[in-house]
Length: 253
Image (cartoon, rainbow, N blue to C red):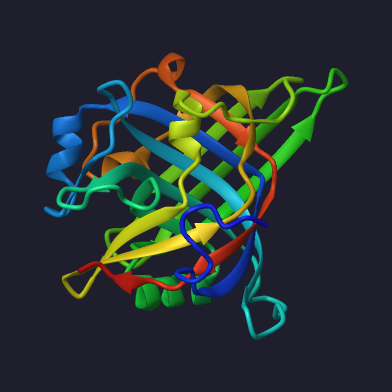
């Protein structure tokens, strides 16, 4: 597996995870509104002058530290995150296109606690579900929902229902909007007032387009972003499962 964001000498893996049943739903958002919600060190990363926010439900399995086996009951969770794309205002040539998470819902209590403590990520414990169904013509219907339990602000819910056809799963073309949205191998977070950065590593996503059938985007609204109003403007993709190396977070100096 090639290490995409940086060299092996700089990447310090601490976890294994597998991300499965991934669906990305994106909308464009006003860059000025987005900038007002980011830490002062960061600014929106734009594609052809547009900023984007994503609602991303998926299933996480095989969660384990590199030195331990997966433990029953602790190694899997459903997750839905609200994310956008950022770059550092004062750093030239960031080593990888980066993500900023407004929130991350998860049903696994331990995952919520560890991510909050270790990375400063805004994880929330939620009641969640995810299901897929297949039709005779090969089309797939996907549905995922969540209801936030704690910590406050709670409750808030989300729902994504989408349909996918028979298009093959393929890597996004470099330079395309799809590549800009999904090929992200770093994140920023704030913990105790300090900006952190962490890297992940996995094979390039293989994705296929879909169509949004229904959506309750209240997690986006709860983040202070405008509520997406038109299903027709949503950019929807599903992705093949990927095994992921999770790197250690470090302070940005």
